[in-house]
Length: 369
Image (cartoon, rainbow, N blue to C red):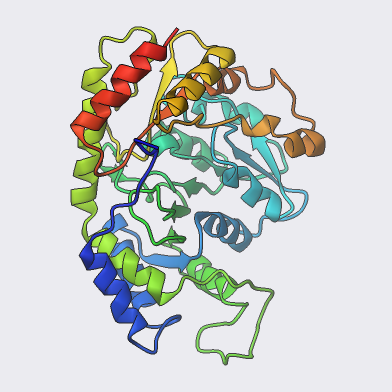
């Protein structure tokens, strides 16, 4: 490929930090784990952080720590990466989808109340593509109905809404550190909360059900091996120390795309809403006239030109096993389905150059119908 969809930004600082751990005897459950958790909690502004091996694990442990179980319902969005829904299913609960706002592409707060039943135990909204728009309204509805919010901010590290950081809206909030995210630990995630009981329970659940200071063969509850190694944590510590630099780079890439595509009326080009400071995760444009056939043709032609692009996201409710298990069908969430047929994720990463972006935009214009 000539221009890749995503690339991590790893410097000699990260390589040396990881090498330092490899030279030590503490590869897991060592000092870097606590250090990463402490600096991350401080950056977001929460009392506790619990490092885990993925954002998916973080969502599942958050739900589990709140007692979500078989027979419960959790409200979420059908326009998301699948883990937002499958983490609910892993507890035995049912994901109940609510359609999206056509501008922010986040769950539509005005439609949440109609989905609440006596089985609803939580709301799990997602800051899609790093956009926190509408999360204040979501929290107002959750508070009104005494429902906890599990904030899926896996794509939103560094974003804020009216000065309030992504990661501070939920009773728990979960970040992900896959290599295409703002910072990476290779694989990894982080749970944030101000609730000491929930934090302690998540610490136990991620470590085979051991309580704090318990012996290695002492297990107080059913738990899992969702630990994040000190190797990963060392990488995360160094990446987080560069977050302002990383965010600035990504903002510049987004700005170049916005400038170069501003006059293209065949596309809807994303921009931050008033009050939103977006830490860009990806840059997803949409066809002004939604057409799955045209979108697939564009993806194929761009790929053939050596430019990686993708369709972020397919509608979760129409994934075959979701249809089979819950009976969701075409037409259930029309806004999500329309958006999903029009999205084109363009190459996006820290060190993408202005010249490369110009090549992407020129080729995109050429293949647009």
